Image (cartoon, rainbow, N blue to C red):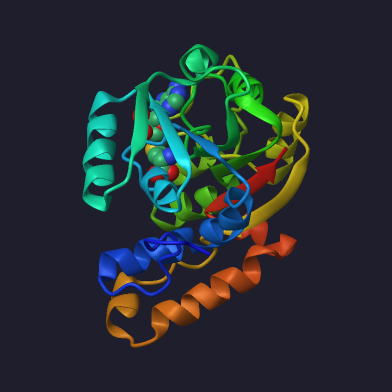
Length: 250
Ligand SMILES: C[S@@+](CC[C@H](N)C(=O)[O-])C[C@H]1O[C@@H](n2cnc3c(N)ncnc32)[C@H](O)[C@@H]1O
């Protein structure tokens, strides 16, 4: 469990934080035991530090590699507000080994990034190089079936149709809004990069479908929703319904 700070934000008061906690609680619950053994954590595409700063709060040495100077500036502001140190380095997955160094991380976070990189297979190969032997990759990606349903339900039928096809190949640019992956596609990509999958979790099965006002106004609704999200996260039959898949791999 967190030593200080509130990395597992299951009991927060502001509506926006409640919704954020509902979206990330399953990931934190899987991540915290893995982080327990880690010294160096590398967050690729860590952006403004939503994960990285809180991992630093837990006492780990955290480096964020991100191509966006604006995101890195926001990361430093966030870390400053929390009173933690996070190293920010401008770079991307294609320059990862040069920027971070080979075998430099015990845990690599790659959350919400595989969707937008030029070549997901090459990105995973680069991540493998910066992980120390026995290190763990925490991979969070958008799940395709749920994205197709969400687009169709909001009347964007053309976008839903376009998302039906994989589009994960190295020579295919990411579609507008980013790629989405199915579990078999992810497993194939990870296997090809030499990773063994330890666990797959369904993330955000219900939270994106629930009206925000319900969580804001109904006492106890967020806690009940968190319990439900946790309950289904380990059930394979719910993975095709999940907005995101979280994978732990070595
Ligand atoms: C959706 S945000 C995710 C941010 C953060 N990982 C999180 O989960 O909150 C995607 C991030 O990936 C970064 N990014 C885009 N292309 C990248 C690349 N080729 N290599 C590394 N990061 C990239 C963006 O700058 C952005 O910060």
